[in-house]
Image (cartoon, rainbow, N blue to C red; front, side):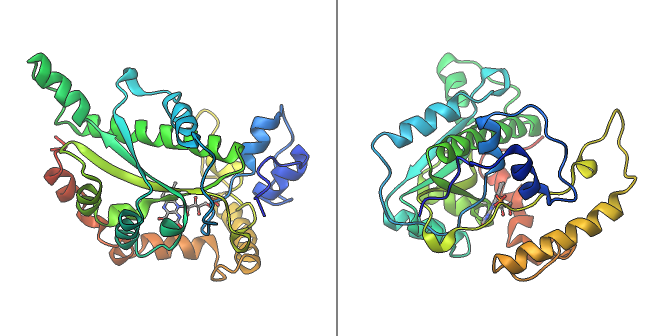
Length: 279
Ligand SMILES: Cc1cc2nc3c(=O)[nH]c(=O)nc-3n(C[C@H](O)[C@H](O)[C@H](O)COP(=O)(O)O)c2cc1C
């Protein structure tokens, strides 16, 4: 069964799925692109079917069409299909099985190495390279490109899930994929056809009032909205076989203890070792 990404839902129904009926905002301007965006869900189980020929090229063209800071294009992607490499990468990511199942695994790379090589070839020292800002630019570029690829894949009836757990051990990811200094795998992404067992619902988000601030930041009503969202997510979790949990408990579980970072608390040291001094 393919996940019905091209949602036939009315705008009102699509908004109700994303926010719950109570918190759904009014329907505004709408088209099929927006319907597609609202139908997104991460998929964690894949059929082994290969992707149609030249799917990768299409996804990369979509990715390269994203905005990129000053057109510096400080990102790269490693398209991994070798089963042994996928197994090794899955091991880094706490053995997430979908990494081995999916026919295509993309490692999105914040990559300042290419422009460093450009500087070396031109005999110019690029003074901005060691700065934290330069890493941030590259990480943002990689994320924007990846999200364009996700939307493109979903528009083709494919499914995806980001894999931030690659950052559990960025140096091992660099070893497996042969990254040079100045290249950092910010996250991975599974691409493939969803297995029927992995079909899930659209996951609700916080009410818009919590995330949108008009002219200045305003936390009025945040606690009340969070309580309502906890209720919605508790019911969603129960329906979708996730450990029945509220959003509040999830945030505390993920952000409350260093152990939940699975080694990512050593990120600055890893970045230093990988050619990002972060001045
Ligand atoms: C940068 C990033 C890293 C993520 N890493 C993982 C991951 O390692 N494993 C996983 O199962 N999901 C991962 N996700 C997926 C999120 O859990 C998911 O997007 C979130 O729960 C919202 O669900 P939805 O995408 O179905 O709407 C990641 C998402 C992002 C944006």
